[in-house]
Image (cartoon, rainbow, N blue to C red; front, side, top):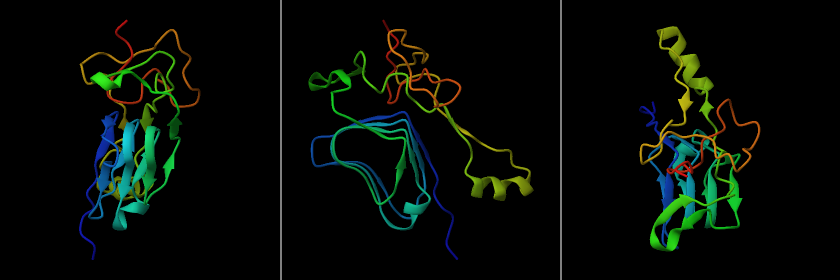
Length: 170
């Protein structure tokens, strides 16, 4: 029988490379959920190898100057950016720029996978939805950018940006 499947929650990260590198490599049958991540300047954003490819969930990611966005799996609600989403990435300023599509466009919550819920329910283990963090990498509370309309239909709290840094410190 197959051993336990490694599962992770990889949420709201900003992953920037240097051309030919890969942002996230998933191997050894792992089946994480990747949600609301921003990938930039990479040869490939996400590469899934082996048996985890059918169970890995990749949703609401954004890709800027990425050769192959996702290899070995499928993604949902991803976006390809044609304009640099950062204020000044050449000097390491990855704060989201005004009017970039990553602002106010995160998926706030994703329900537990059905296969996990079916397994956990008889054991009395409560559902564990995946929820986007309420604070960014600097500890700022995520919130609405009043100068930009959010993308409709992405949950109850759409005022969270994709990526690690929230455009909130005006």
